[in-house]
Image (cartoon, rainbow over all chains, first blue to last red; front, side, top):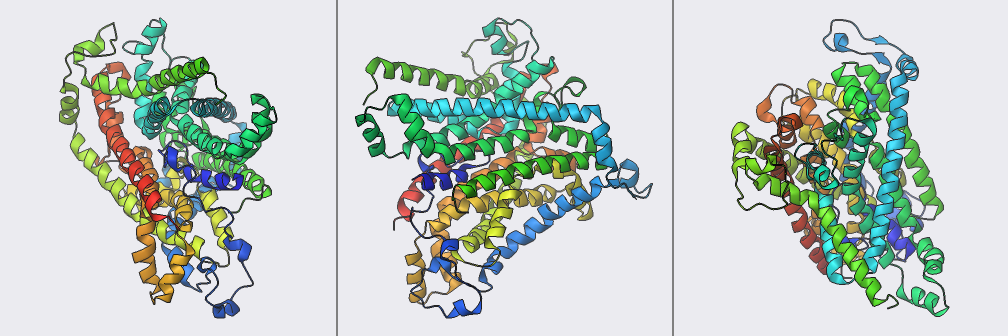
Length: 350
Length: 276
């Protein structure tokens, strides 16, 4: 069962968009116990062609067929993802500003000069720190809210559960751009309802550095907790009732049941939602850009992603912006590789 | 079972209260879009309105070519959804129904590709689009978004393709069906609900994008898309919150509708098609 939920949860990955919804959390997965392709793999090429038909079609050795099916995807990804990533790395090693773009000056190779410049730049260090702290705060809050509400969902009857689920799905489906405009409006010092309800007068949330970050955090948590809630709820529902009953019969307390039965079974699901939130919150762009008007007063609310964009396009320092992009890419790559290692150690199949 | 009655009632009350808080921003958005201008400015922000008006919507559609931007956005998102669904279907079939060298490597690559920060690639993509002569065209939005939707779409579709029983494939071949026939006449209809579900994600990310629109559609505003138009409107200092909220509502509703439709098709599709 762990096995099943662990693998199906990633179908809901990529935080903010609406997902397949509550009922489908465990649906699209493979039935447990079915042999997986790599598990039945046998030595390859020509000999397998003569394999008798009784073998499951799943492990079909199609010769060139899989590559023909993959061709369109590989062409598109190669041209529009891999090549741009390569270009990004290349630009980060060049001197590339407005002068070079317009052809006024020849491009010159800088080696790691741009990266050295970044390391010396106090603002870069500050933005890096802000990004890490902000992403961590978002992840912790999102996970806490999402998990708490998932547990709450298991304690209530169908109707209130449906109401909460619908509200969460609405937040989930809201595009980041409109979510941002709405939250700025809610906290607007002049006409927003929040300040009035809390009696804050004309306190401007976007003026101070921390209050602006807090405002963005509220919006980020609002639109990303539903993913955590729905996935974790599906995970809890997948815990077999007999196991819980057995624990209850043995006189285990609720806390003990949670710690010794539910939590271990939920581990793969929690891992997926954590990693997903980390990756997603580290890349936050739209909310910061829209809510703090491109990075806040004097860039006080910049995070790496927005900083890279502003450096490249607002200041026309394309190579410096590209170097920031590469730094981000490397950090996210490291996180993804750690994730893959943990998943593999748990014996999950790809 | 073990939960006491008053406790459960308290939990339910809390759930309803939280639901109200979570739904409040969307409610407030729609409400403010419908409020007459005077009420939005007034000091007592009432959570209802007795005289709803469409003035804000009218203003949005008149001041800017909002209808056109809406269609542009719809066209871009539609093209991305169709193209990425087809390409991802073929690729997901390849990685789930076949065994071949580099299969696992490819899967890891698809996973890694999902974490690439799209925004950072704006710089090289800008130059790529310039070289392809796509700047100021909707193609400059469609092409990158197809690429960025693919890794996730493939990853998610695998589960749906895998759920189609092998026996079906064997039976088809025994009955003399060609591989292409099996692919398009048997596998494709069965995976369709999954394809539709996957397409929500490509739809959302494309629909939401303003960065590529901002960067690649430099001079030709007739090619602009909805988020761009909304952000042009978005000037908190000028206090036209009615207009901003009307524009936000116009942009949010299609996504909500699509989401609701997909929900239903997804559930029915899964219930019907994947019986062994």
